[in-house]
Figure: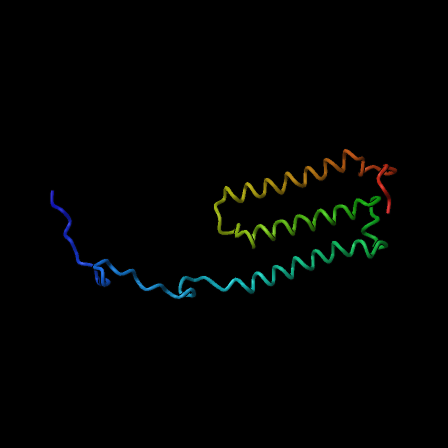
Length: 135
């Protein structure tokens, strides 16, 4: 059995250690500047938050009164899901992580929506004439 042949490093520094290769520029790795993505995402989230806030100012919008307030609840839950997905996907870099982490986050989203619906059902929100405060 023969030992592998020793090859001299291409270059060494003053202490005799092999020099590390020069770092490549950030753009050489195929990465892009994420600042524009973060700004666009923040603006998108601001618009969604503005729509949620608008529900307090435009109380006569027809969707809010559909099904004795069910339309408003479904609209706000949908906005919540969109914002949750956007924050997790962009700011927490879920698209680059392991699939198991994606499953954990989606399970959390499903659990949160299920708990919200269960609490609303427990307070009889879905029935007409319920004891909930009416707008």
